[in-house]
Length: 215
Image (cartoon, rainbow, N blue to C red):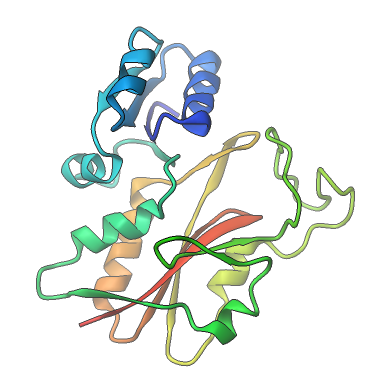
């Protein structure tokens, strides 16, 4: 890990920045936060701070698949969905639709967000903040883990929907992110799609999903 963008400086974003900067003082960490008061509070900390809306920053500054090394979403929106919506070619218009109810009922512990996104979790409890995401046994329950959520979402076959999943990978215990390459690959797949799309961002246990069609 050399360069990391953390989108949001709330509890989770600041925790990520502090853990990563403590691990390696030479790491290039940029925290993007739109709240001016929070920006003032984090000035002088051992990472860069940019006072700007996170989605806008990603739109204006994410240019290539090789930089930064990792993006950590830490704002209460489905960041990859917001970015892809902006970056689609002008002739490919994204129209949000509801995730089908019958599909939602097949997902583990789903609940709907304020913008129609569906949050999904293999856990019906609050996970330890520093969970190492082990392969076989759940840290909290001590029981065998269910199927990795990102794999389950990748395998969805529902009507004519295309299921696109951006995998969030663990960088440190309880801390995950994805690469720019994963975003650009998802954008290319969605741009070429002629069917409705389910776009999810997910790790082994938790995820978020939006549904849309391209006109």
